Length: 383
Image (cartoon, rainbow, N blue to C red; front, side, top):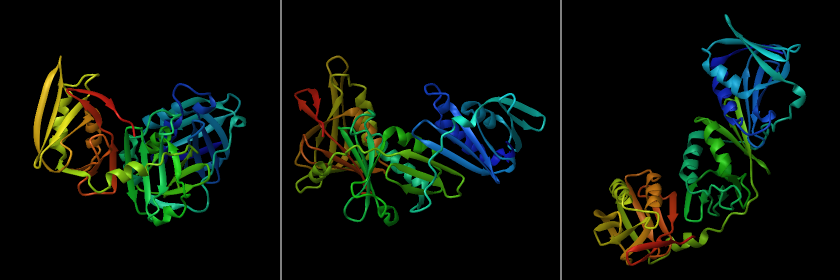
């Protein structure tokens, strides 16, 4: 195999490929980047046995071939080389791959092509054009609410039709639930009725690999494919058949008649909570919220740490006088609200609470309050 390629065109893709290879655990095969030269293109391919990445770039191919090389070594080398033309050729006698750029010469041990296993190609039909930045932003809004445990039924992102012509992206961890609703008729026609589920660990791969411009998506029975719209880079991840909880019960509760409503400035609430958290302990990890018509009082206390009480301006239409939440959970929720004002809907003192940007009802976060007994916060109810 022998070819020339401009590193300015392929360096980013090679780095993405290198990010897929496991740095510690895994077999030698999983730590290998496969390089395939054919016709006028070169492909760089890596997998961690689940996620697969293929970057394909134009090249001056003088001899076609397929060879494996240490993913970490070649990605580190390309990252540290100046942009320009490099020549890559194999030395079959010594089982090495030789990379040269001007007066620079490098040799890396190579792996036989007999180890290679075919990657999943990007399907030819039923692709949907979308924006990579938009998908990344949606994942970021949901990610913090998905359970970390891989074997948990809560440990995945669910993407499904909502029955009203829209698509919902949602995730939960048993205490918090996040949902983004979008309109995309093209994507909707390829979603199965019960949706698709992607495990949390693969969402991290999507965030690392996805391009911020236009992308193409394909949903198959077992995999989720993403390709750059310029056809240079693509990756695929497996789908899971884990069943997803029916979340309609707590959605119905926060949208029912008789709920209490609050509107307040996010930063005022967030700063007050951050100060209240100083007075939290492992046993007293919550804050008490007291509502009046035009204010919200935030308080926390501990026998050893002392107490904190702050009152901020708020518009409240509430039949609930008092409610408690885990301070850290509230801070986490507010940090993901992308607006200056927050609308909060309380279904009951121990029922689900809805948090939304005041200017965007398409993004919803639901959290469960803590039960308060005198001065102690002792239990957080699961959904």
